[in-house]
Length: 343
Image 1 (cartoon, rainbow, N blue to C red):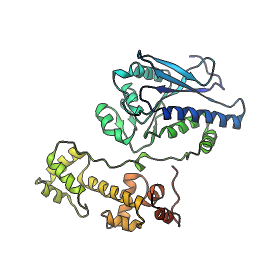
Image 2 (image 1 turned 90 degrees about the vertical axis):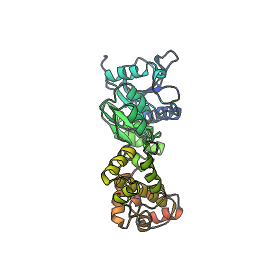
Image 3 (image 1 turned 180 degrees about the vertical axis):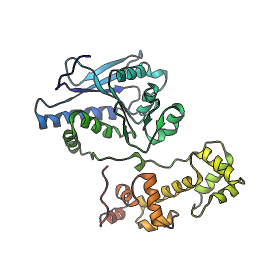
Image 4 (image 1 turned 120 degrees about the vertical axis):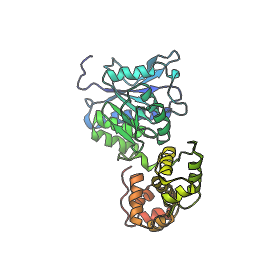
């Protein structure tokens, strides 16, 4: 490999495959060019730069460079981004030589990065085997079933393992882009880029945005009947014994079958139902936190706050400040409220 010069631009490649989200591809390209502009303003002509290239899957299954922001020979990719998909998953024969191309680049020392559904392409390449990755929370079950040797943590917006970086939601390309700007151009340039683009560079977690989507197609009709009952009633005061009796099963048998069918034990399932209800109240009402806790099925407000933070990663007050659609509730947050955590 040719030795890199000190001021050689760090080339970041972006894969263009059928049905990839073009707004992410162009958004990342623009962000890196803004970063170059900020780097030049801070360090002059000799400041480090980012070179952006697009690599497109051709009809014959090969992969070739179709765009380059810099002229002259390339010394190789420092990072390769697998963008999110708009609909069709980037898997199977239609991906042609892309998985092999990704593996080849990784073998040359390129950091491989995925956004949202781009994690499927990462898994197709085999590079995610034995790793912990993140993707959009709605993909968790599907990607977990398809690639059983890949661990998935959809609470995280971004997981950086050095040679592989994965990011969660469809818009998490913003988080990834800033991470790469920080890595290649430095923190000062990253912060200047974020200010110019009016992006908050602070850390955030995907758990803030995920919703409780219970598994209902598991095929256990008795457990499904209990789920329907739980969804249609207040879970306050509901115990394992009550659910087991309603299912006409012993406690241990019910617990085992419920866990297998839903992926949660009954207590966790009820907690998530209550928290889902409280999120709606926090977003749309002006009730106090104590009132929200009570209406969600919690007698102990402190216990409610602890469970809310455990599941979502922030407090009920912080959640309301971020996501309330009620003007009155937002006003409540401005009076002596805790500061809004960085997004």
